[in-house]
Structure formats: C-alpha cells, structure tokens
Amino acid sequence: MTDFDFSVERKRTNSIKWDRYPGRDILPMWLADMDFQCPEPILDALRRRIDHGVLGYTYTPQELYDAVLNMLAEEYDWQVDPEWLVWLPGIVPGINAACRSFAAPDEEVITSLPTYHPFLDAPQISGRRLLTVPLVLDRGRYVMDFDELEHSITPRTKLLELCNPHNPVGRVYTREELTRLAEICLKHRLCISSDEIHCGLILEEGARHIPIGALAPEVAAHSITMMAPSKTYNIPGLCCAFAVIPNRELRQRMIGTMRGLVPFVNVLGYIAAAAAYRDCHEWHQGLIAYLRQNRDLLEQTVARIPGIGMTHIEATFLAWIDMRGLGLEYPAKYLEEFGLGVSDGRDFGQAGFIRINFACPRSRLKKALSILEDAVGQLAAAPSGEEVPLAH
Ligand SMILES: Cc1ncc(COP(=O)(O)O)c(C=O)c1O
Image (tube, rainbow, N blue to C red):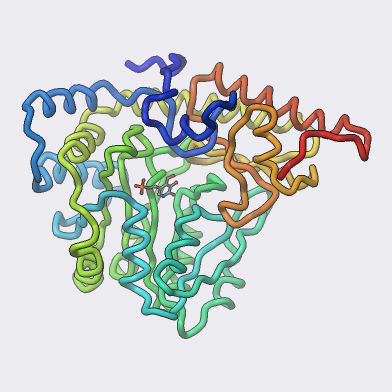
C-alpha cells in the first residue's frame, strides 16, 4: 500500500513538472501529474514485462480489453462492444483528431470557458473556428449557461468539446445537466467530443461520473467518450488512452484522421493500463481518501485568506482559485516570486485565476498553502504605492 505522505524526490528525474524552474527554489504545483508513486501492481507488471527484454511493436492485449470493458460495466453500467474502442497515445491527440474529423476547415467548434487549454488550441491548430461560452456561477457552483450556449451555436457549428469532470473548475456534471447539453447538441446536429480523463477522481461523496456515451443510445451515436488511466493511477508518461465511439461512421472518421500520423500505444503503456484497471482498486480508494483530505485542507485555508476565493471541488486534484480581488495581472508570476509554482488562469482562458495541483504529500501542500497565504498577505499589507514583487 502506498504511503501517500511519503515524499518521492522528483527533481532531476525527467519530470516536466519539477524541471520547470531550473536554479530557482520554487515548489511546483502546476502540471496535472501527481507526486505519488504509482501503484505497486503497475510497477510489478512493468518490471515483469521489462525483464522479458524485448520491447517491440504490439497489438492491444486482450487483458486490456477485458480490464477496460469490465471497468466500464462495473463503474458506469455501460456495456461496450470491444469494436467501439479506439486506442490513443493520449487524450490530446484524441481532442485534436476529433476537431479534424467532425468539423471541416472554417466550421466551428464550441466549448466552455475556462477550460483545459488544448480545447482552445485544437480548433485553431487545424483551421477550425473556436466559439466559447463562459461557465457561470450559480449558488457557488460553476454551471453551463445553456441559453447562451444554444444562442451561440450557428449552422456552421459542428462539434462541442466537453470536459467532464471539468478541468479546471472541478465539477462533476449531473445527469440532468448532461441530458440538457445532449439535447441541445442533438437538436443542432453537433457531435460531442468528451474528455473524461479525470473520471476516476470523483472526490464528492455521493457524486457519480456519467460517461456521455452511456447517457442514452442516441447520444452514444453522436459522441466520442475519451478516458485514460493516466491521471488516476499516475502514469501519464506511459501514454495510453482510449476513445469509445459506438457509431461506426464516426469511428472510421477518427481512425482515418489519425492514420499515419498518430502512433500506436506502446507496450509498456498497454501493460500498465491493464494492471491499473484490474489490480489497483484498493490503492485507488486510498488515493481518493487522501485527496479528499488535501482538498478539505486547501478549501479551508483559501476560505480564511482575504481577497481570494474558490468553489467546492467535486472532482480532480486541481483547485481553481479566484485571485481577481488582488488586482494582479499575472498572479502565477507573482506567486513564483515567493517560491510557489502554479498555473495561470490565462492558460485556461480566464485571467485573474490560478490553478493549484494538490496531489502531493500533505506536508508539501501545507508548505504551498503557507506560501500562498504569506504572498497574498504581503499584498494586502503593502500600503498602496509601496513596492511588492511585481507580477509580470
Ligand atoms: C482534461 C485533460 N485532458 C487531457 C489531459 C492530458 O491527456 P494526455 O496526456 O493523455 O494527452 C489532461 C492533463 O492534464 C487533462 O487535464
């Protein structure tokens, strides 16, 4: 059993998260990978495969089909035909392939703001047009503004990009919300590309993740549902994900877009994914319990810091903090001056916010929160006109 309090040294271990600030003493709490060691059953499976000594090209192993189909049936009561699965070396290639497959050049792709930045990049990279509709706060909860969404759709809008659970706002959309969203998409003949990479990270007691493709057969026929073990079991570097695409025509379009460009999943990614879904149930429960406590600590701390705020995190290990009250142009840069490395809201399409990854040993989270408190306090304490470290 992993001791989540144990601090693994990640500096100089080929980690994008930890290598971002060379020569500077900055605690990295930005990129969405966890600082925990991945579960022992995954490491064991990888060791056994590596000991074989040959790492060639590979078909998707039957054990992975079995593990994924079981997981979808048990967790979501979703009976999936193995033919519907399209294997991906990451969700981001899936997001990009979906844009190219389901909207033609100059047609429109619509999504909510803020959002995971590849949703914003993908339409632009491929010459599609991006439409955005802000999420709105309703009784302290981020929700979609369905009227505004429907109002924004034009005859050229062909694809909706959904993030559920939502990065960065941490929402788990309810059946009612998803049903309403799907009704709008079906009415206007939009395809739905749903990124559900955080579906194994539901922190809210009683909340349930609902895959978009499991909502109703007519929704399944117009959607692609993408999932991966990478966030939940901390194996994002192994690059194994999948899309469930029940509609044959949509599936053929995705496969056609990817052909010759998107690499096959590698053998270690496959082996790790199978072990994750099959053998790591207990570890997963331990992780969720630990993350809940980290989330509670973070929410309580933010609540007592004047000038900043956040909504309750229902899922993910990411906190979306509103710093607009502090009047900083680049709050993430400001915090770097104090030794805290977070993501800036601008990356997600909303300036004035920061995103903190709290999937780390509690001692590290406490240190990060104390830096945050101190940095914000100094700002509040500075008489107007007095120099505080500049946000660039
Ligand atoms: C919502 C979301 N989708 C996709 C990814 C990345 O997926 P992948 O590494 O499989 O391309 C992330 C990583 O942070 C994410 O938060």
